[in-house]
Image (cartoon, rainbow, N blue to C red; front, side, top):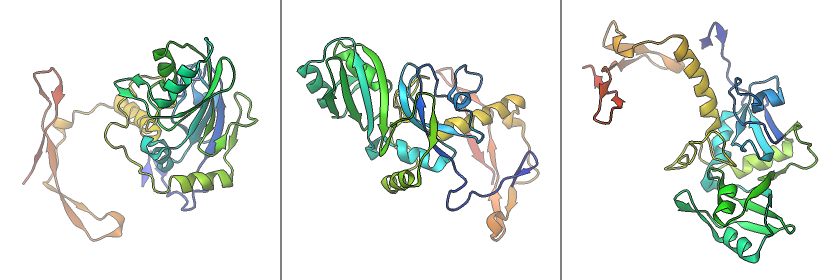
Length: 280
């Protein structure tokens, strides 16, 4: 297969050609692959290979985030039901009470649901440590706000078995072989696709510890750019015959039935709907 005249080669079976890095994101960096956004995470890192973040930290937050060139591992790590730990150190404006710790631990009503039970440990008068296994939109800030607390600093210190350690803000490093071995073992039974409402709370552009299909959003950016460069009315595309010969993967030739797309039809909600009809 060639794209723009360049041959696309298969990835190495042992994944040695793939990038896996840990980055200590500073405050003010936006976790987006859109290069026109000032302070985007890709320009901040300046890696020579094409990479994208696994999940996000919102702009006012800081701390550990993974980036990779491996789309296969992204969803495995991010599936909420896989219960992979993410640890945060949070500073609030008011002194922490026992009631606050108890309520945060048991679950708080936000975004139309009750957050899952989590581990919350006081670290000081205004500081606590929290370990989450889910990632709702700006979850920690919303939980604190519900209980009348304002977050003044939020730093993610750990994802699964990887800690931010001695990485200074703005620094990154490659994940070690042992770290990747543990990660791969932890996600070996994980799904790579979404179920149900995994992405239901991801409308905002700034997301805190959120479960997002980073590879899909990253690659869709290129698709959108291509579409803008050359718009085609698919209803006007004509085919010479009703079937297409296919010999994919060196298999026997097969005949594929042509599917035509009808012109968009406006619905009573004002939205347009595409319908398909099969040529017989």
